[in-house]
Length: 287
Image 1 (cartoon, one colour):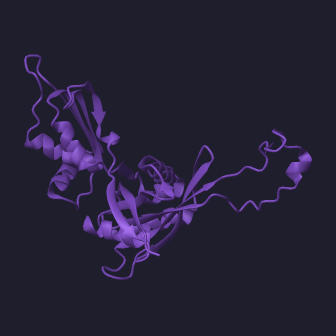
Image 2 (tube, rainbow, N blue to C red; image 1 turned 180 degrees about the vertical axis):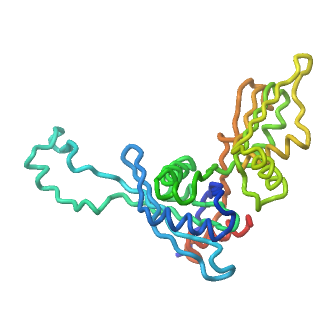
Image 3 (cartoon, one colour; image 1 turned 90 degrees about the horizontal axis):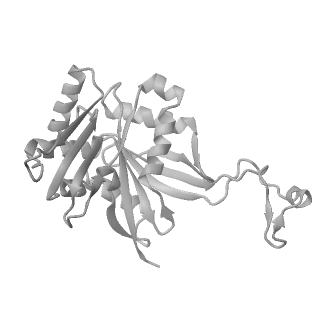
């Protein structure tokens, strides 16, 4: 039976600076997967599950698989008997026999890592899936802090991809009192603007640059020009844009690009394609 389902796709920009090549990003993911590392928040645990390279189309340009999210039950913690509404007795707990390697409540979250564009895309919302980009960022970030990764790749830069339309809307606020643009090292093999910015940081032995613009006391608002717009566009994938002033509804406040992670909305037919196939269509559309 065919049913149409909606899903959202989010992403993370991953940048290594040992060597800017698809092969190096492939090696990074291979090392991360090999760690079999997990990150737990409250009782939910995340890990990189399977990881396979695509052989069709452009060979080995995509790595795909699933993130696994599961419940990390700690058998030694107190148990509760919902029938007696009391703490479980030692006799009750002795009846529980769950092998340590088995974990309940598994959710498989499809991902595709485009090693050419060095961007990781994943399904952030679907019928049985709901995961924040910040959770996936936290997983990859903590894995990249592991000694084997740091020894091999140095510092890995990670940024949740922002919605560039929302970033453009921030620059269109009628009243901008303060505008802050922070850009971490981009990849020098990307767009011309990003490559030029990377070269500038490299010449200065800098890993990031922050620019703060404040409106003149005599003016009503800052006016972002083409240079600022270009910097904000780079920061959408490689940093952060923060605006303080009044939005289109003239509400005073502060907003950041981090409040607007990329969420690509798409649909697929369960009878014709898998969720991973549908994700691949979205990824290929952004190359």
